[in-house]
Image 1: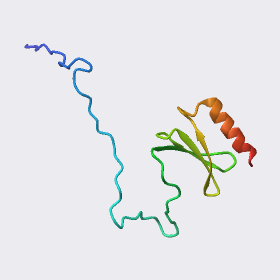
Image 2: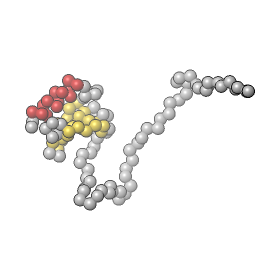
Image 3: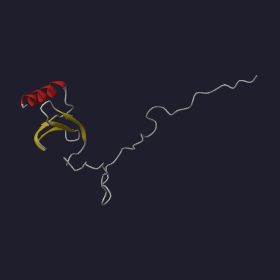
Image 4: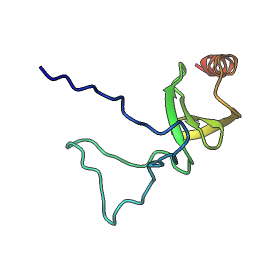
Length: 108
């Protein structure tokens, strides 16, 4: 019986090679491109002009909160219009999130 010794793969040391960068990029849609939806439904641009929109939340009072990570802001929409913009600087941490949601809850 013949047994071959296996060697562990020889990997480069950490940070010895360049990092790969294969990030996504936004491109304009082709001319005439349209989303196809079932009969009875419609699609339209609801809000635009954001650098990096990341998260949407429906607040207790029916407002929609949209975070724009790149700009460091949370936009508040009601009735289809932006009614407020809150600067976050970093993440929307618990005390700030609680205060903002409490203020929006009072609007009901």
